[in-house]
Length: 177
Image 1 (cartoon, rainbow, N blue to C red):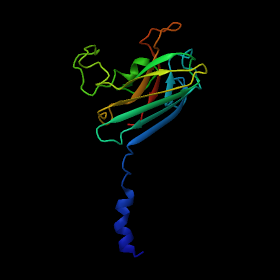
Image 2: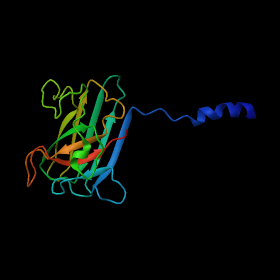
Image 3: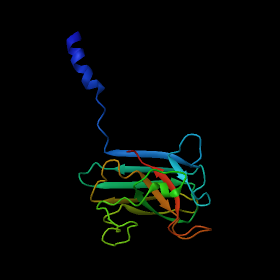
Image 4: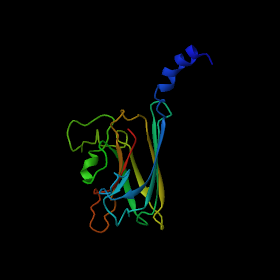
Protein backbone atom coordinates (compact mmCIF):
# COMPACT_ATOMS: atom_id res chain seq x y z
CA UNK A 1 0.00 0.00 0.00
CA UNK A 2 1.50 3.37 -0.95
CA UNK A 3 2.56 5.47 2.04
CA UNK A 4 0.30 8.47 1.21
CA UNK A 5 -2.74 6.17 1.00
CA UNK A 6 -1.89 4.47 4.33
CA UNK A 7 -1.36 7.86 5.96
CA UNK A 8 -4.79 8.95 4.73
CA UNK A 9 -6.39 5.89 6.39
CA UNK A 10 -4.68 6.42 9.74
CA UNK A 11 -7.23 9.00 11.04
CA UNK A 12 -10.03 6.54 10.26
CA UNK A 13 -8.29 3.80 12.24
CA UNK A 14 -8.01 6.10 15.25
CA UNK A 15 -11.74 6.83 15.40
CA UNK A 16 -13.54 5.22 18.31
CA UNK A 17 -15.75 2.35 17.22
CA UNK A 18 -19.45 3.16 17.09
CA UNK A 19 -21.25 2.28 20.30
CA UNK A 20 -22.99 -1.06 20.06
CA UNK A 21 -26.76 -0.96 20.43
CA UNK A 22 -26.47 -4.03 22.69
CA UNK A 23 -24.51 -3.95 25.95
CA UNK A 24 -23.85 -6.92 28.21
CA UNK A 25 -22.64 -6.85 31.81
CA UNK A 26 -21.52 -10.12 33.42
CA UNK A 27 -20.52 -9.77 37.06
CA UNK A 28 -20.34 -11.52 40.40
CA UNK A 29 -21.77 -9.62 43.34
CA UNK A 30 -19.05 -8.39 45.70
CA UNK A 31 -18.85 -6.11 48.72
CA UNK A 32 -18.67 -2.41 47.92
CA UNK A 33 -15.43 -2.30 49.89
CA UNK A 34 -13.56 -4.63 47.50
CA UNK A 35 -10.07 -3.42 46.52
CA UNK A 36 -11.11 -3.03 42.88
CA UNK A 37 -14.52 -1.33 42.60
CA UNK A 38 -16.93 -4.12 41.65
CA UNK A 39 -19.36 -4.00 38.73
CA UNK A 40 -22.02 -5.58 40.96
CA UNK A 41 -22.52 -4.84 44.67
CA UNK A 42 -24.57 -6.70 47.23
CA UNK A 43 -26.12 -4.65 50.03
CA UNK A 44 -28.02 -7.62 51.51
CA UNK A 45 -25.92 -10.78 51.56
CA UNK A 46 -28.81 -12.90 52.86
CA UNK A 47 -30.67 -12.10 49.60
CA UNK A 48 -27.75 -11.57 47.21
CA UNK A 49 -24.72 -13.49 48.55
CA UNK A 50 -21.21 -12.47 47.56
CA UNK A 51 -20.20 -14.53 44.55
CA UNK A 52 -23.73 -14.84 43.16
CA UNK A 53 -23.87 -13.81 39.52
CA UNK A 54 -25.78 -11.40 37.29
CA UNK A 55 -25.96 -10.98 33.54
CA UNK A 56 -27.65 -7.82 32.26
CA UNK A 57 -28.34 -7.36 28.55
CA UNK A 58 -29.58 -3.97 27.37
CA UNK A 59 -30.72 -3.98 23.73
CA UNK A 60 -31.31 -0.64 22.03
CA UNK A 61 -31.12 -1.99 18.47
CA UNK A 62 -34.78 -1.25 17.66
CA UNK A 63 -35.30 2.46 17.01
CA UNK A 64 -36.90 4.17 20.00
CA UNK A 65 -37.12 0.98 22.08
CA UNK A 66 -35.13 -0.59 24.93
CA UNK A 67 -35.25 -4.24 25.99
CA UNK A 68 -33.52 -5.28 29.21
CA UNK A 69 -32.95 -8.88 30.30
CA UNK A 70 -31.61 -9.82 33.73
CA UNK A 71 -30.40 -13.35 34.52
CA UNK A 72 -29.06 -14.33 37.95
CA UNK A 73 -27.64 -17.36 39.71
CA UNK A 74 -27.11 -17.99 43.41
CA UNK A 75 -29.52 -15.45 44.92
CA UNK A 76 -31.97 -16.22 47.74
CA UNK A 77 -34.21 -19.06 46.56
CA UNK A 78 -37.91 -18.48 46.00
CA UNK A 79 -37.65 -14.70 46.30
CA UNK A 80 -39.13 -11.82 44.31
CA UNK A 81 -36.92 -8.83 43.48
CA UNK A 82 -38.40 -5.73 41.86
CA UNK A 83 -35.66 -4.15 39.71
CA UNK A 84 -35.38 -0.71 38.08
CA UNK A 85 -32.94 1.42 36.16
CA UNK A 86 -31.39 4.06 38.42
CA UNK A 87 -29.58 7.32 37.65
CA UNK A 88 -26.45 6.85 39.80
CA UNK A 89 -23.57 4.39 39.94
CA UNK A 90 -23.47 1.64 42.55
CA UNK A 91 -21.60 2.52 45.71
CA UNK A 92 -21.00 1.53 49.32
CA UNK A 93 -24.07 3.55 50.31
CA UNK A 94 -27.11 1.92 48.67
CA UNK A 95 -28.52 5.41 48.02
CA UNK A 96 -25.53 6.20 45.74
CA UNK A 97 -27.47 4.65 42.85
CA UNK A 98 -29.84 7.62 43.00
CA UNK A 99 -33.52 7.66 42.06
CA UNK A 100 -35.28 5.58 39.44
CA UNK A 101 -34.42 6.62 35.90
CA UNK A 102 -37.48 8.21 34.25
CA UNK A 103 -37.98 8.95 30.57
CA UNK A 104 -39.96 12.09 31.53
CA UNK A 105 -38.38 13.28 34.78
CA UNK A 106 -40.71 14.11 37.67
CA UNK A 107 -39.70 17.57 38.96
CA UNK A 108 -40.62 16.46 42.49
CA UNK A 109 -38.28 14.03 44.29
CA UNK A 110 -38.85 11.45 45.51
CA UNK A 111 -41.15 10.69 42.60
CA UNK A 112 -44.51 9.33 43.76
CA UNK A 113 -46.81 10.94 41.19
CA UNK A 114 -48.36 8.10 39.13
CA UNK A 115 -48.07 10.33 36.05
CA UNK A 116 -44.27 9.80 36.32
CA UNK A 117 -43.78 6.77 38.57
CA UNK A 118 -45.24 4.12 36.29
CA UNK A 119 -44.13 1.23 34.09
CA UNK A 120 -44.36 3.31 30.90
CA UNK A 121 -42.01 6.02 32.20
CA UNK A 122 -39.62 3.78 34.17
CA UNK A 123 -38.01 0.53 33.07
CA UNK A 124 -39.26 -1.94 35.69
CA UNK A 125 -39.07 -5.70 35.94
CA UNK A 126 -39.74 -8.33 38.59
CA UNK A 127 -37.19 -11.09 39.03
CA UNK A 128 -38.39 -14.30 40.68
CA UNK A 129 -35.80 -16.87 41.73
CA UNK A 130 -36.37 -20.61 41.69
CA UNK A 131 -35.49 -23.12 44.42
CA UNK A 132 -31.78 -22.79 43.50
CA UNK A 133 -31.82 -18.98 43.54
CA UNK A 134 -31.64 -18.67 39.75
CA UNK A 135 -33.95 -16.59 37.62
CA UNK A 136 -34.46 -14.52 34.48
CA UNK A 137 -36.70 -11.52 33.89
CA UNK A 138 -37.12 -8.99 31.16
CA UNK A 139 -38.88 -5.75 30.36
CA UNK A 140 -39.15 -3.37 27.45
CA UNK A 141 -40.10 0.25 27.01
CA UNK A 142 -40.87 2.38 23.97
CA UNK A 143 -37.99 4.79 24.61
CA UNK A 144 -34.23 4.75 25.01
CA UNK A 145 -32.45 6.18 28.04
CA UNK A 146 -30.64 9.45 27.53
CA UNK A 147 -26.89 8.79 27.15
CA UNK A 148 -25.09 8.60 30.49
CA UNK A 149 -28.24 8.92 32.63
CA UNK A 150 -29.26 5.28 33.29
CA UNK A 151 -26.15 4.18 35.15
CA UNK A 152 -27.26 1.13 37.13
CA UNK A 153 -29.83 -1.59 37.63
CA UNK A 154 -30.97 -1.94 41.23
CA UNK A 155 -32.56 -5.05 42.72
CA UNK A 156 -34.89 -4.11 45.54
CA UNK A 157 -35.57 -6.46 48.45
CA UNK A 158 -39.13 -7.12 47.29
CA UNK A 159 -41.19 -9.26 49.60
CA UNK A 160 -39.84 -8.51 53.09
CA UNK A 161 -37.28 -11.08 54.18
CA UNK A 162 -35.28 -10.88 57.36
CA UNK A 163 -34.39 -7.29 58.26
CA UNK A 164 -35.25 -5.86 54.83
CA UNK A 165 -38.23 -3.73 53.90
CA UNK A 166 -39.78 -4.20 50.46
CA UNK A 167 -38.14 -1.07 49.02
CA UNK A 168 -34.64 -1.61 50.42
CA UNK A 169 -31.88 -1.85 47.82
CA UNK A 170 -30.56 -5.39 47.97
CA UNK A 171 -28.03 -5.16 45.14
CA UNK A 172 -26.82 -2.98 42.29
CA UNK A 173 -25.20 -3.61 38.90
CA UNK A 174 -23.32 -0.82 37.13
CA UNK A 175 -24.25 -0.40 33.48
CA UNK A 176 -21.98 0.89 30.71
CA UNK A 177 -22.24 4.63 30.15
